[in-house]
Image 1: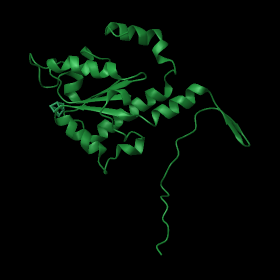
Image 2: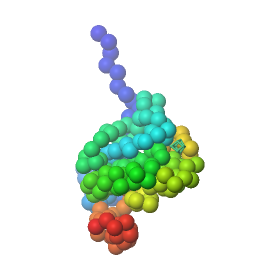
Image 3: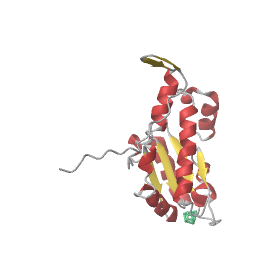
Image 4: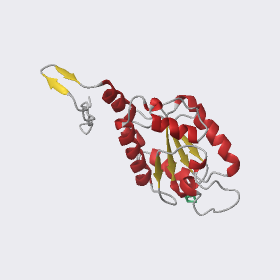
Length: 186
Ligand code: SF4
């Protein structure tokens, strides 16, 4: 019989700030929720061109986004909380991207992957949206044309920091409300 092998490299996430003693640990509710959200992001890939290929590499076994708890891709906005926009977005595509964003439930976040999604990139033309933040709010911008998978992972880590530390009631935050209003979103 072959001996059972255990993966000894498995690491636990760090516990949030709190109080502990023999047999107990206590912390605040928002820290626990932040920890859970941070480590179980469900991405929705909105890939339209070359940056999408880099994203596929990020999902592959070598880079393995599953190491960050974000391996569960969803292709329905109602089951996802991170919109990953990777590629050139034509102006005609803008309203569709916005509709996908609106169909996602709160809390929801957006990462613009690469120069095209962030700013239109090299396509300073009549047909290309000069950055997706013209139609939806963006939380993290990943630079590069294309960004390497390491850059995309860095963007995910930046988002994880944000998710971990933001308020449980982000939707009720006046700054967030103002941001949504500026996009005409209620
Ligand atoms: S940023 Fe560069 S690699 Fe990415 S979609 Fe645009 S042209 Fe392609």
